[in-house]
Amino acid sequence: MNKAVEMKGIMKSFGTNDVLKGVDFSLEKGSIHALLGENGAGKSTLMNILGSLLTCDEGEIYIDGELVNLSRDAFFRKEKISFIHQELSLVNDLNIYENLFLGSELKNGLLLDRGRMEEKARLTLEKMGVDVSPLAKVSDLAPSYKQIIEIARAIMKESEIIIMDEPTTSLTDVEIEKVFAVMSTLKAQGISLIFISHKLNEVIQICDSYTIMRDGDIVAQGKVTNQTTEKVLSTHMVGKEVLSDDIYQSRAVGDVVLELRGLSKNREYRDINFNVKKGEIVGVTGLIGDGRTEVFASVIGANYPYAGEILVNGKVVKMRRTSLGKRTRIAYVPKNRKENGIVKDMSISENLNLSIMAKISKVGFIDQNAQKEIVSRYVDQLKIKVSNVNDLITSLSGGNQQKIVLSKALSSDPQVLILDNPTQGVDIGAKMEIYRQIMELASQGLSFVVLSSEISELQRICDRVYVMFSGEIKHEFLRDEIIEKDIMLVATGGTLKPANGGN
Image 1: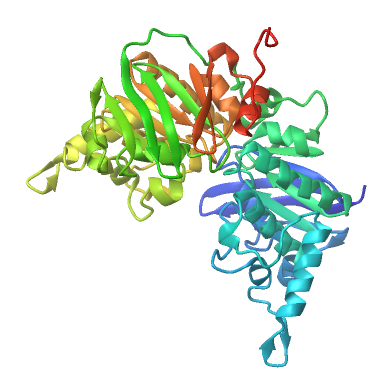
Image 2 (image 1 turned 45 degrees about the horizontal axis):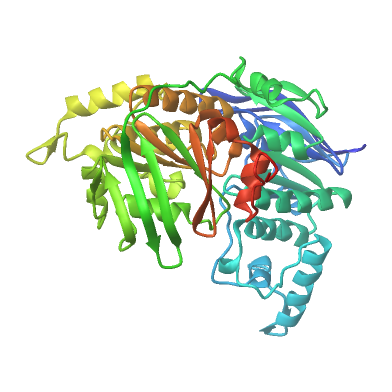
């Protein structure tokens, strides 16, 4: 194959921090190439240089074999290359074709040529193998289709190279398959794709080759073959073996601390019967729209009124407001860290202590010593990589931000901790550390409810898993029954056959 991209000797520093140390990277035409590494490895900087969002200090870039003039050809690269970021930039109140042409509308004289834009959008979607009307409103689309519309934008401007940064972070397995189908179609049409992801199973499934970065250097690269395993990739990424099958540890569990009896709310969820015992880790999964987030929003007092009962330590509690969730020692870690988990304009220390400011304040003044003690404790316990706790929270990598959000919940001394997609957008090293912390805390008696779309995550840490479909719990899987194909069958509305074949 010919090279779509070659980057040679790319160097980039920010002050005294050498982010890229002479990186060589290449992408073959008509291929899907994984770019891997922990947060802070240099992946985003390298891709921002390729996409002309940053300039390199030293190095050369070739596109289609031609040396790019880095000082003059930024526009050329922006035409050839599209960068699809993890945070989508669609306008929900507009329809698909309006989003595709936003900022580059077609006109007939002084008026918008809506007919021509709609037709061009329709042809683009057909080319991608996507069956959706260009008149559909973006707010009505499933997350997978929103991701596909971002890809369609790149196709509309005839990009030959598409960089996809964590495109499947918030998608279910079924939705991921839709995105992968579109990626395969584009590959067959000769378009080259760079796939940045922390989900190593997806790399093995969809990619032709990979490059792994660590601390600003390339540490491994090659073709994806039958010998390419998640363990091999993760070991290169972290520099040591991190994936292990022995994370799960059986432990004694106590009495039921949280129970739901016949919990129902309009069309959101129906007749939910659920329990978690002291020191137990219970998973809840399904497809997007299954109702699990709404159920546990009610549990923490953020989705009242509801029918049915919520019992904490055997006593019925009416969760009318979130303050009752705190009072009953139920804490919640939201799935969207950037929107709901952190305050970007506050420091690391302030974010960590945000939920307990009242406890560490005296006469309106914060007890600085108490604040420092709590921060120090959780930075050590969760192995949070931080240079100065007074820096902004945004100075941390995604994995370390997630650990701060987890620390904030733990600092409130909960007896039940509800984690909604706890490792979303987190690199493999941080992910395994979070799993080990969950297991350690469970052994100390803390109960966990883990809401997750990643079956492998549930397999690693859960004692039991409830599967929801269309607002109802359809099946409960015990530890030795947590099998991906069975969970997906139930999650998509299917019914498991009895183990004895029905005899």
